[in-house]
Image 1 (tube, rainbow, N blue to C red):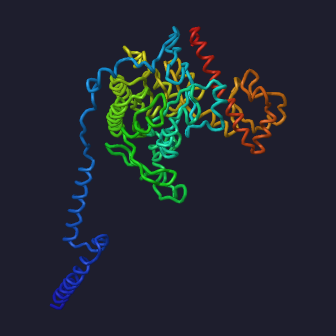
Image 2 (image 1 turned 45 degrees about the vertical axis):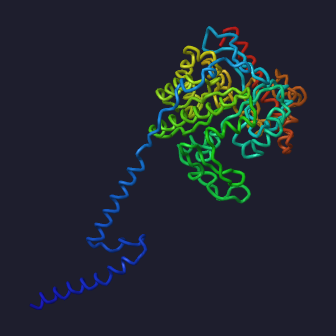
Image 3 (image 1 turned 90 degrees about the vertical axis):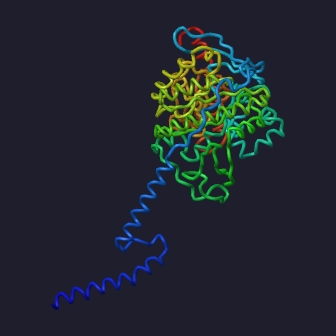
Length: 478
């Protein structure tokens, strides 16, 4: 009897404790509830909340359905007619490969193809005056809309009379990109960084320049919607929305000879479903940019940008759609593989797609890759122009090109290389006036002119190489 009484008393005590604690639990902030109390009612609430959260996540993952991008019939008939200010002339097609020699005629001069395109990020080549670049044979120069939009602003360049007057480079053509590549690089970094990190997002800097707010780089740096891409300036943290229409408006103000529509740049390691979504969005964006461009052409040509990563079917879909629209040339962009060998394989099955029908009559540009090995791999497959900051970037690190391979001017052997130019067959002003020993001294003394002299040589070397390649194609040796 005493034992039964004891059990009854304990049960009453537990019930009283629960009755006392339950109101206290309900008065706690939501984030502290259900952590230490495991009554059946609270478990039920927790399970219900978990189910609700799971359903919410499923709803969020459901893809939004967009209408298909406009077709060829949605653009005016006159847009498909030849331009009187821009044309591509094929001079010779190799009998040995897909290589070809041609000329791109623009309002500000001719571009011989295959041709190297130097990158002038802020409308200036790093360490090289445009006059020296012209003497080195540089024709087409690539400027970045993203950087020019942030500083000094497209309006300022327009007030100056456009990029040609602003830079006093009236007799040579410019090409500008949409700014999309740089915007998406805020999240993933450079192509090298994205590949090295296997697609990990960049870590947000603690502070942007001039003490501005966080999230200029990293996971929160870029927000993509159907309208466009939201991002913050790396200069002062101010917010921008880059749309298919606004990039064209900015490029109109800048006034380059060739402009690029807005595209989205997913990384190499992106999931397939995400890549499909990105390609479809890029098609819609590029069509919107093209429509905006055709409202006021202003003697500018527009190249499309073919996407699809290393996926054959997506690349073919992109080529088939974009080449059906009235673009003036074809850009090859997006993720182009994890190294030179994969790029070569990609181009080997991609480039023949541009030989079908009238596609062959338009120029093809490989975006962002133009090291010597990649050029020698791409040209026989039918690439006409390639851009890169490779020559000037390497010059900043004392690396120079020669017919015997690259080497560093800061290296010990150069210290006493008296009377030995960088390349004994080079006719650039650097090789004609200075030897390796003096250049070694300039680098070791941290003299800025060392970078300039090396960059002039590297740009001259690249253009000399392209001249030789064109001659070899004309002889069907490539």
